[in-house]
Image 1 (tube, one colour):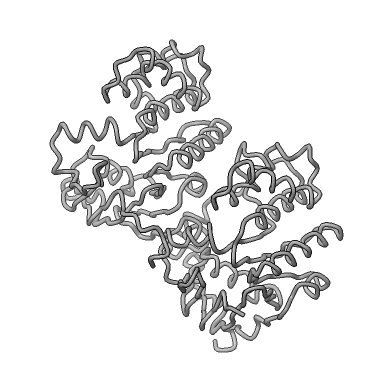
Image 2: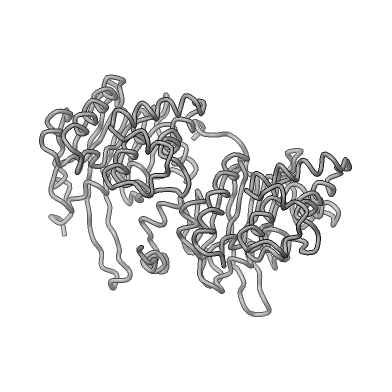
Length: 234
Length: 262
């Protein structure tokens, strides 16, 4: 299988200048790769650095050491050294991020929020909206809400809107940041099916999933993040 | 990395420095701006962000450094070597400037329609009917009712004036728009509407924007890239969400941690 993502000796520390320059080591020598069609789940307790690894891959956190190599077509791009506009391009075409936290934008309807990433990849507005409606229906978001801005939705509804937004577009790499947290059983099952569909399409996925059942169903491999803990060295 | 867009930058800023006597306005600022890119300049009052914006928009000559702009014919020109006529044409057609105080960017004693139409006449449009219908179309795009076209902006609310100023700037289809605290001084609901409008227009028109703001939420919503200024220096720059979520410099960490959570 083709390697889509490779983390090579990645390390991250935070320096908290407002707390007297305290240095917080997060992870070091993170090393793993993800193949097309594979779902790798990051395991380990809270604070072990799972989210930080995901955020570094997405370019949301800076990567202090090592390389994060991503296959784009027949080229290899290092996210750790990429320019801002290259990271934006990667985010629109190559790397998707599914999280539970929706950053609502005033006056934009739920279906438009969901359709946006697909339209950004070149689909027509009509196609984007059709697919958005299909996904919102699958995730049991009531139809009367689709044309309303999600700012006033319940937490669970917002979360499902954001999951739909995360799954709608075609990304060769998808990062899953607790997509099933606090979902009911029926919606968890929908997310599991969405992940399986992506796998079948050859999407490489890295996930954080605390839910044991979901993890068992979708993980091909579990990587224990505590083995990258830098506190051992400190 | 040639998998990415091969196009050339629209604006190239090289070591721009501006002194006020002995005091530093801004020091040694360099960056490139690409077509369709929104760059936010953030920092506290007195950090040099407005000085820099004024240097970029040829409103204030830098003490040192150079600013190059890609003209519509594709040639890179040094802005401070343009003739006065060329510079004025650029400002009236290819550029926009949205002031914090709408009254600075509007003519307050002529009608809303004339405020928008004036920019069209400046680029040579002479057909009254066309000018009026284009002005009406633009008022609609910034959500001003058609029946207000003959009213002058003194009768408009602050939010409406700001939207009118935006229409006046965008009617000539500029490629680069400078904005100085465009949402400053507006109450939050009016601000939200204006931000959403700006976000859509910028994306639809593929505008390049340099926006000065002290509001990090505005920067997060509108900009791709951010530059943090302090004491005239750019102390940190990068992808907007990276700088805001993983700030590196002590001052940036202070700015980010000072945002009130609602």
